Length: 536
Image (tube, rainbow, N blue to C red; front, side, top):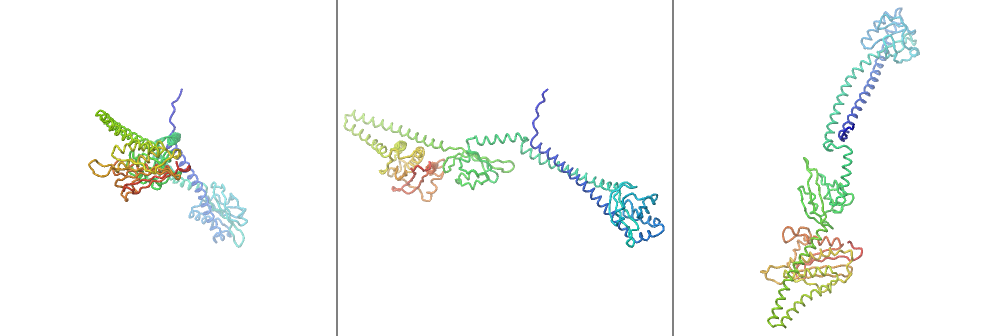
């Protein structure tokens, strides 16, 4: 017959059982110690009392004088009984040096031989012993009676062991009540503590807690999303490997306050916020991360759970996708324009104006080919060349002229493999887009045609990318804010491009700066080192 397996006792239950046993053992041990100590103290007290009575009787002048008489018992028996009753001891026996009793609580025992040792008293000592006499086992003290330097008698005073035991038993009853009360209080306290522990451990046993801890550790290291847990004091209570990598935290970050981590101010504000944050995009020095926070509340604020997703690659791909869409729109527009020009050429031929048709077509081809030849001849890097041609088409569609500066030159192989083409697209593409936005005019607004001038130069161990426009420029008071994520002159939901430019420049170990351009607009300059040791 197989019995069903029972679930192991919970950790709180095991601790409760062990604590009850421990409390009981402590209480019983203390009670036993108190009993032994109390019995020893009772015996010591009884001995001191008997010694005091024996010495007092032996030193009394009336006792010495009675011993000199012809019938010591007649005078000493009433005196000894009076002392015994006044002091509450069991007996006071006065005897001759030959151990013949002159007094005894039982008058019939007078004249008999004293039961006990007297040799030490006959030598002049006062000693104590436990001996079984006519009244049973007793704690007694024997001392000599001196008269003129001569021992004329002996005095023995004692208390029976039964009387000492009865006193100890009376104390033991009170001790048992105290021990029982201590055991009950200890059990109740242990129950309350373990009930709270059971709530915190959710009734799980030690094996389940250990297994959950193992799963917890494995999960933290396995998930690719960053996970950060903050306590109520906004200190890092837990962070997994991905979270440490995304935030650039040192191994000893656990226990530190979020405000002391040297993170960007907007990201620090999101982590310290008391309200929930959902899919907020933030930039660190090297990454674009999406932050979600959720407070942990249980009667009081206990902390915050933060998840971090790396969107650096996704943001770069999104930028490239936006560029591709722009290229597509530009090609569609160019195809439309080319169709219009082709119809114009065909119409001129049909009207018999062949020479004018040839001149018109040649002028259009020369205009388009001139920019292509200029870009391809100056920029041998195919990704940058394609980007410039595509952005030129986009700018032309919006009525903006994109010009490649005369001193632009990037030879083939000048850019190292450590400088990702994706970062170059991010930097130059966002700078050109911002410049085109800055100089775009509504058709009804009079003024010169917008122009964007691009400089791309690899020289002296560094790559220089400069984009200038003839727009209104940037307010000098806002020059330090333009690279902050969220800053934009085009309303909410914008303002990420320049922040990505600074981030990409930082990844490449370079710098980005803002000045007023020669045409009065803004001029952004990015410098990236081309040395082999430059940061990738």
